[in-house]
Image (tube, rainbow, N blue to C red; front, side):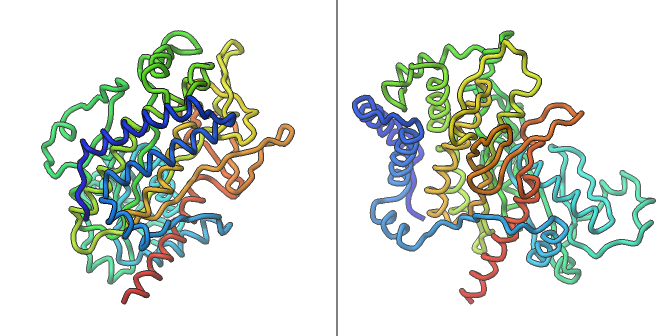
Length: 431
């Protein structure tokens, strides 16, 4: 693996950001998306140059390609789950990531419960250990008499058991930052960790203990949380810090301080450059250097947009709304400032991931597609189509999201099935 200097990489990225700012001050495209795409392209090029030598980058670029899982087969969960189980026979799968990753893992377990007729109880994000999945269906009353204490004491099956029973093992480790340290007593693991840049608590479990033993890793990092001080008693929030950012770090040029929309998009870039991109590179470099000789298959699942119709649900009439050019292709949707901050990052991160992941032999499962609006009905340029169905439950614009071809988890599992099929094919061809 080529040498990597984290400090040198950060300096290079910051320098490039300054150069790009000067460029866009004099050559500012009218379309905000064009500006963002241009900045993303430049940031990634410089980040890769800071990670690899020019020669290594040239060689890597020739041998790597983007393993991008596009489209959707349209299979119902009842069809995709058995196929996915067959592709994972005898394997151990580790999910590492934030609430969105936990949500995908939890819905997979719910679907497996219905198929297998056995419980896959998970005692919360911080206490989820392992799940012996893809087993033969149980008889109707086989597990009715098993107590919760017995479930907690279940022994993790070994590799031989998984192979003999054609089953799999699913594990989840919570990590909002993807912090990776070989020292399990690192304070970020053992103490409450607050991100000083935004004043928000982060969850960092010691997920590296599983990596030498798993076959597949599904990882992700969500958009950076909005700073805690933006949440005040007003519906608009306190976004005054974005004005300072426009003066000191104007990523989108002369229009940065045009209005609140542009300032928030610029702030989303700042969070990406200062936090998301460095952590992404640090984690991927660590895994490529320190994994066992038989490295696990790496799969990165992307984030999905918060639907504007959900974000606006139950909002007061006096709420401050700003245009959302990210989840809505034509930019005719409006959302609150916090949703814009999140959705802008989803778009920016997608552009970064499609360019960076190929150099680390990582498959990418995107879950965000821009929408267009036709009358009162929301549709998509390309599947999946995000929609929101109001319910009596507490408002949740991350988990209560459906695609036109199914729920977010069912579409993800369908794409995971496609990814595993490609991995199996690659393994066969390399034999």
